[in-house]
View 1 (cartoon, helix red, strand yellow):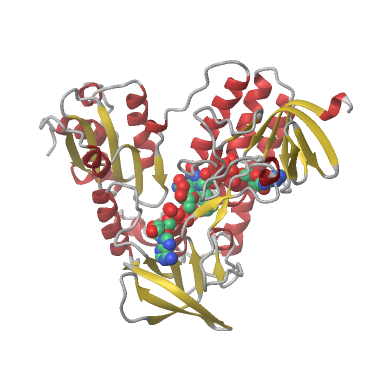
View 2: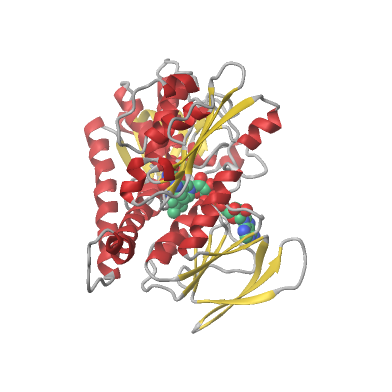
Length: 465
Ligand code: FAD
Ligand code: NAI
């Protein structure tokens, strides 16, 4: 075996988990290779996930604002029209800049990209494109894939997953979204803003399961005001395709009469599942859960010595920054350091407008754990900057321990919520109390003042309501 085929770490998968793990391991002096079979680096996130979806969300938001909000501010814009081909081309440029950025970072850090499908043939051995490489440590970072829905066959043209929904060649007259989760609401927003009628069919009687119920309810109201139609407590049980559209069979989740809905396009967004196909895991005895997640201990080690796993293919939230933090912490552990991820402080953001952002526990989770807590709420209608922006929908909800005042969670629906939540994440990481946030001087007029006021409100001391 030549030296060039032998590495300290081989990472399989170059998504945010894998590429960040590879870079950090290289920074720490290890000889690192990363296997990726896609034409470009960056995984789901950079190629068909976070980045292209945010490019379209930004473009469609600008289009919507120009058509509707500007007139309210006294700016008359005439002749606004959509150039969807250019919008898609720009999205491609944004993706290209990002994926090339990762390639540059690999060169800079001397990470070798092994192009092709990676398969673990034995502990310490990874086969890529007919060559077997040696690795002291193997990191599985192969990500996730959309969950299919029985009876609704995806063709990525009429019936699409998120991947096809990022590429629709024309704005559908009626888009039916199956699943009222993050993907459904983000990509539903894109096409709604560009002119589609959007109906969301959600199995549960609420959207965004797992997020704070009050935030989700308010968000549903705001989206309904924007024109979204929701069929909560319903499921799609079949789809018939024709040249002029798709006819869906919809049934109440708890039983009742089925009815039909016609759509020009259907987005199936009912969740994602770990992807580990063709890796050779059963053959070498790496344990998987019933859901197909790679089983890992607290330090990302699988049951087979020298094989680790991070990101969407293991337990926990399927988020790019969670995968990244695991990648960094694991690389540090492999270098003998004490890498650590605080799973209690992982923010989650829905990049619609308004945005939804969350960190820490929800009220429902605190109640279920029997924790005594205080709530402080502050509406954006009472925030000067939000008024000036014309974005007053939503509120900040702060939760702190009743006894100690330590911050337990924060849930926001409102303008730029995804940026606002970072302040609370930092505070929680430092073990801050609501009082600490309330006593921190916040610039005026900023949206962040709503966070401060919510912190004051946990003690009944909000100043502007
Ligand atoms: P992935 O990014 O899935 O990367 C895995 C890589 O491994 C892939 O490139 C795949 O080709 C490669 N691979 C798999 N098997 C092999 C093999 N055997 N050999 C070689 N290569 C292999 N998260 C956020 O935090 N914020 C967002 O805004 C956000 N938006 C999203 C929007 C959409 C539409 C989608 C679908 C997801 C979004 N996510 C978002 C989730 C985010 O993309 C994932 O959490 C993240 O990509 C997981 O990173 P990962 O490294 O675990 O895996
Ligand atoms: P999700 O888990 O967020 O939502 C799926 C929704 O579909 C749930 O509300 C569920 O109740 C519903 N559902 C399930 N089966 C159904 C059925 N048969 N009929 C109707 N509804 C049904 O999953 P989603 O939206 O597919 O996203 C997958 C993952 O991608 C998320 O878990 C998230 O972590 C990640 N993601 C993150 C983003 C972000 O951070 N902004 C953006 C997009 C994706």
